[in-house]
Image 1 (tube, rainbow, N blue to C red):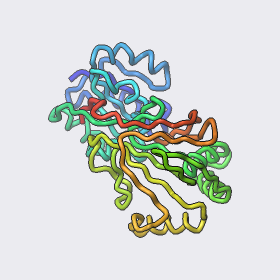
Image 2: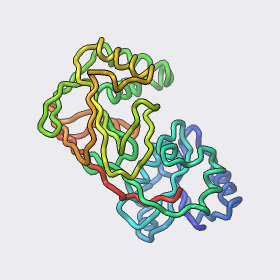
Image 3: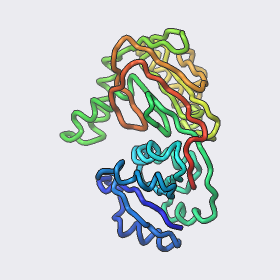
Image 4: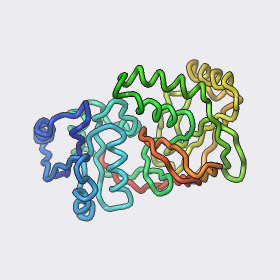
Length: 280
């Protein structure tokens, strides 16, 4: 098997390219081209997308999401491999989390198609949110270089909770006042560590906190801890193929597969069924 390998040389958990090459060679896989995602990635990968290559992506969900953005809707095939901290996408695809084992299974697999989702035409493979989570990430990033990741995360979470901003959003013509909206690519089981059993149902799941009380938020957290979050009266959930979120602000801070950016309102979310061809 011949592949194009996309990797992230700046990731703290990244293996050296030489070691990745040896691991592939041990399973009769040849790397024709290696592309560092931090160096002119889109330009470098374009000819391989056009030729319909097998494109192996190793890294965390952010790296895999960037590769999926280029591969979806084309004849190229993405090979997602675990290489990050959480690896939600590869876990939900039931890909072995040991890299050597994941590579070893490739010869016995057939290509298949899975869904991605888009927000204002930008792909995400896992989920997107507005409100508390992206606000927390933004606050953390401002001080992380000085205090470290985890102390900064704790501080940012407390600060976001104290500020407790609300958003007035309209979904399918219904207005909600909420501090948090979560949109998932396919159905997340919020009673089971937020896992997905399928990535080919062609739907989005939407979960919203529909209370403006900090006490209600604490109750929802408590429900989540004991695994009975669906019992909360302050959580609204729905399943849809597309959803448009209107807000009074012209731009919103949005999380997408763990990365935070400002997006223009309205936010137009769509499921893109069977649009990503994968091997794994």
